[in-house]
Amino acid sequence: MKVLRAKDYKRMPWKNGGGETVEIAVFPEKASLGDFDWRVSMATVATDGPFSSFPGIDRTLSILQGKGMRLMIEGRAPALMTGETAPLPFPADAATSATLVDGPIVDLNVMTRRGKLAHSVQRLAIDHPHRAENLGGTTLLLCHGGAVRLTAGETTADLAAGDTAVLTGATAVTIEPAASAVLFLITIDKPAA
Image (cartoon, rainbow, N blue to C red; front, side, top):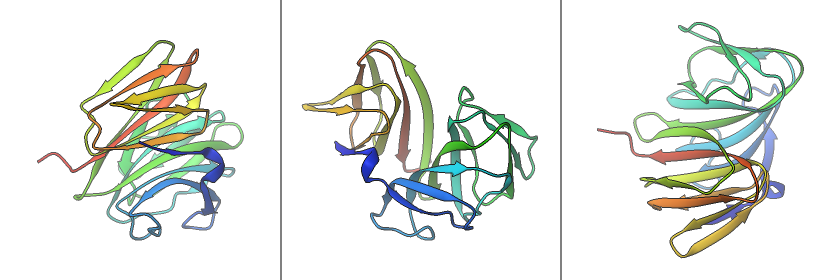
């Protein structure tokens, strides 16, 4: 288990230059925006406008802060995203634009290279110990609110709000909140055959 602290995340401009992204983790390490296999990041969206296009990439978006935004994704009905909405998967190469509901938002983006990897994102609001099983591949746990202690095998780690743990090849992890906590459980693995 590797712990990534919020203060150490890498800040960089969006691919289309329209804002700032905070890179939580990327694989391979030090990969660019054009050659990653997977990437987990947060972005501040302060104005309405188009999303950056990532050819051959699948993306899942979640709202972390703010009142939300309406997404217009090519070929789909408009989707209203808020902090309570389930994470939304969509192709990162489909033409997509956003309209803010009421002021800036911060979103969580999980992206994987289509055909090579697949991912899932779950939002967990817990107030008692929770066990996540059948993980495999790479698992990231982003503590969005509160604080938690993670146990995977013989390894434990404490996460404060904003911190992320990366587990490789773990089959299960126990999540113990200090009181109540909100986490995002991200799993990345080879696509199902």
